[in-house]
Each structure stands twice: as structure tokens, then as C-alpha cells.
Image (cartoon, rainbow, N blue to C red; front, side, top):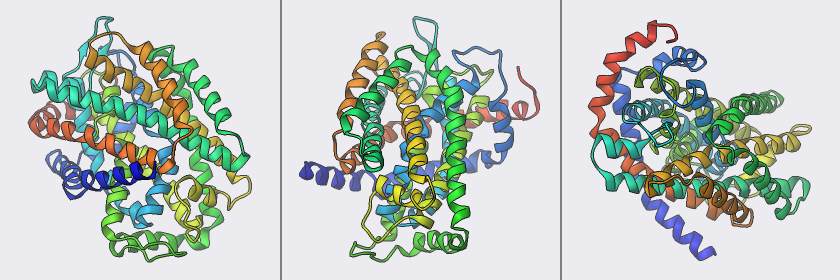
Length: 443
């Protein structure tokens, strides 16, 4: 198993090398520039996200938002951030935040194209995403299938990640056997996803806000408790972003390149900007035009990375044990153990985060498989999803996270290609509708 893990690590070093990082960063910088810093409309975008629209679509704009956030806000916001810091140093958090600012423009562009080129399936539901953009907007069906196939692989990989993270923490905190944790996770997830998109969105509407507020309060509690160390922690994040980090506790030091690589890749894995998965949820939204849902979708990066991941990362840097060679969930646990009741509250947050992502990504996976096979396959996919979850509880954490990095890299390539080839469409749609969306009320 170690040989396989080492092979995948080397492959990811290539996939997530300078070319991929340059493509993602370049797309963010380009759309930020061409759209005249679309991020400046954040407050209006947040306002739009809670307004109802009477336009055509399968779910409300807020429903699409919480579905996207459910898929995004998972154990990656806790364990993934801690993994980025443990392998890329504290400086990885700086690069994660910087890339997220530009990622908001990418997320906007993905949603605009997804709504513009969406279509109705045989049951009358709106479906879309990069695979439909590639098919309907560019007449590139082979690339569309590649994206959909990679999305399905990423989805099943995410099922492994969430279950694996839950097993690791429950075993560490409460010494619960992997079989029990896995079985309960599979049972709870199955009761939701087997009810289809309507039930999935209904659960996400209350689950996402509750779990996000709970976790943010927990992180703020850690920061307040360690307030004297906070300035040094923030300076360490900035300093190590440009200098790397020295070896601690006999561990190998981290270079600036590794800080950038793990910061950006874990950021993409968390907020999914560049991979295009969030556009699948955006395409189902009730929206009068592509721009409105584009603005709403951009806020997912803000909440996911610039708020939740930032608080999570600073909490780990300020309170984590970096001298023991801890990785991922163990490093996160060391930070949260610094406050009374922290491990139990971390366990609750991880449970909610993992559950929401399992629910959200099951929909993405079913949509991707349906596109490939051209048939109604949601129920078989959901059952397969539950089986994969069962396997995830018994795999190596390092292997699971590296497999996710591989899948999301493959997704990024066709998605970034479609964004570049249709960049003019994004700009023209923005010029057509943006002014109206900034001034008009709900329609």
C-alpha cells in the first residue's frame, strides 16, 4: 500500500506542478481583471443569495447555494487545512487565502456558463455544469465525458475522504471502532440521499448554516484563548509563505514551492473553484439570468475558504502541536484539545461537515454518471456511493487525500479549457445583466 501511495504522491507532484498552479491562478487573475474585480460586489451577492426568484429552475437560488456549500464545507475545511499546514507549513494558509480571492472570479464564471448552457432532462429538472458547457457551448462531447468521468471519480473519492476522516477522529477521541463509525455514517447518509435532490436540498438548508456557525464559534474560542500568541501566529503564516519553514521535531523542512503547492491545491479541493463541480448545483437554480447565480456562487468561496478555512488554519497554527510530526486530523485535534471540551466539539463539527459533504457530493456524482450513461441512474449511484463510503473507513489517510488531489486535477483541465474558450461569453453576459442585478429587487 505504501508503494501505491508513494506513486500517487509523485504523480500529484507533476499534476499539481507549476503548469496547473499557473492555470488556476491565471484564470483567477484574468477573470478578476476582465470582470473589473467582480469580487467587489460581495455584499450584494450575499443579499441576492437569500432572495427568492420566480424564474425557471429546479431549486431556489439559496437552495443551490447551500447545496454547493454542503459539498464544499466538509472535513477538508478542518482536516484538509491541517493537512496543508502539516505538509506545506504555516505559509500554505497564506497562499490558500490569496488564491481564494481570485477563485471567487473563477467560481462566478463557472456558474454563469453553467446556467447559460444548462438543459432540461426527461423529468423536467434543470441540469448543467462544465460537461454541459463543453457539450452545448463548445461541441466537445469527448471532453465533456472526460470531465464527467473525473467528477464521478472525485465524488467517490470524496466519499472515501469524509468517512476516513470521521473514523480517524472518532477512534482517536472516543476509541470507537472503525466499523461502528462507518456503519452509522452510511446509514445516516443513505436516509437523506435516497430521497433525491428535493430531500437533499431540504436537509442542507438547515444543516449548512447551523454547522458553519457552530464551527466558527469554536475556532474563535480557540483564538480568544490564545490571544497573546495570535500576532506571532499571523506573522508566521506570512513569513513562511515566502521563506518556507524550518524542520521541527526531526521533520524535514518545507520549501516555498511546497507551501504554494499545498496551499493552492487544498484550497481548490475545499472551494472547488477551477474544478467546476459547484457549477453543477448552480445550474439547477431558479434564476432570471446567468449573472445572478454567478454572483451567488462566488459567495461560496468567501464562506468556505476566506472565512471557515482561514479560522480553521489560524486555530491550527496558533494552538497545534508541530513538534510531534502530526498530520491532518491528528494536528487538528491537538489544536482543539487546547480548550476545554475542544475534542468533543471538534468531533461534532467534523461529523456535521462530513455528513453535509457526503450529501452534497452524492448529487454531483449522480449527475456526472447520468451524463455519461445518458440514463436515470441516481438510485444505483447512491447505493454504490454508500458502498464506497464503507470502504473509506479502512484506508490510509495519506492515500485517500492524495487520490482526491489526483481526481480534482483531472477535473480542472477540461473545465479550465472551457472557461478559456468561452471567456468572451462570460464577459458579454456580465455586461448584459450585471447592472440590472445590482439595482433590481427579486424577480
